[in-house]
Image (cartoon, rainbow, N blue to C red; front, side):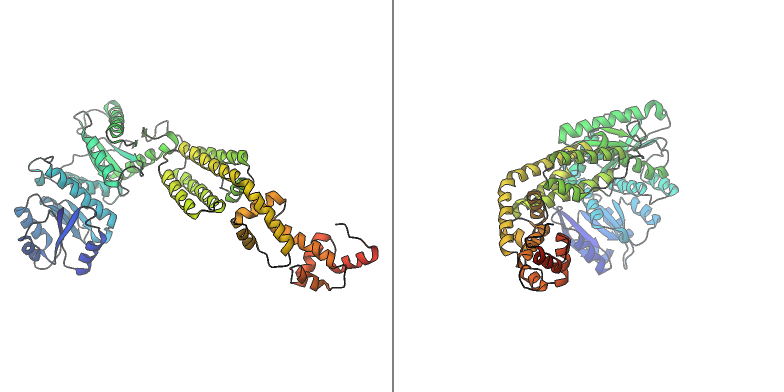
Length: 535
């Protein structure tokens, strides 16, 4: 396990660095802490760490002096510099001593810090296996190049500083460049394993000498490749895009055959200076995301005919969860399938990846809610939810999503059809209970619980079987009983209470709504005409 030492004069910062990483989990051991360079050197007498994390500005001995002394004693040590100052001069001074990473404390996030440590660990692993050439520590670390390229795609550095730092890092000036974004299914393999597979596959690519590449991860963990022509010889129209397409397709094939990974590669338009990196990255990512509509496992080039503009005339639509639930409860399988097909047709016309993700989540919520309402096994529902989320995370294209949702809703409908006859008996039981205990307090929640069905499922099934809602049925039964009682001498208010409607005004209102006359008018008509009033 590789040893790590932290050198920082502020205790709270040391504590934060110590706490934000699960050191053992990522295969590292926190071997010591010091408040300045002098203390750190004294600790190192007992044994050198493999990775040194140090502040720049410290009392007694600052970080630059510490690094210079450590490099003399241990040329292969990996070094991460921390600073409160976004000063490029410090970075240039650090690079002279082979520093691996330069991080700004205020911008440092646990995920970014962990990613830097994992990259250094991978570098140490490679060195142990003899895959790092002798003397490589004298040149700038690949990790530092990756940090520079990450800054460029995020627009954190101007063109002038970009050219200066690129030169310091030994990177050629840009003449003709393209950016590739390698998109893998996030559900496949682990975060570090995916990156390592891409690095190894890239090393095996056969390419012409005038093409060079730099490989680096973005903050989402996806890998990117900056491809540049080594000189001005050859215009991109002649030797640019065609070789890049071959390289991209070769990388996809190697990842599939050697590592079982299905990759989609987006390629940016051509750019010729460092200031163009940010836009090129956006283009490459957007191109890769079009796998949602064009299919995965292929190369998609920004500005190509495949990337047609979305149909701006496509009618705005919104998922009606209530309508979907109603069709399920009414066993309207054909109507439900037609509605789902229409949803995905509109998504295909719009070609909006984020909209597809939003709609997919809404449909998933409908599915899980319905299963929860029609199942009496909470554990089964929980397992089904986990299964759904796992399966959905593996879907890459709109066609895969369409097929998955249609099959999932069909499975739900088959389950409900299987339950239907048993649940019909529950509705009969509920109507019998209402007819007997109409005068008591009966709520939708209480009666659905009595027959062991969820409230929403019971309400929808009741309407389907009886032809009216639970409340309409209960009220009608109560008014029928009230009509019988009104033939006697009881007051209308007392009659209402006896049938379960305790508010006299509300009883009178409901009675008139159903019969067309008030309770007193009904009583008068019965006395004058006998029999029952037809309504």
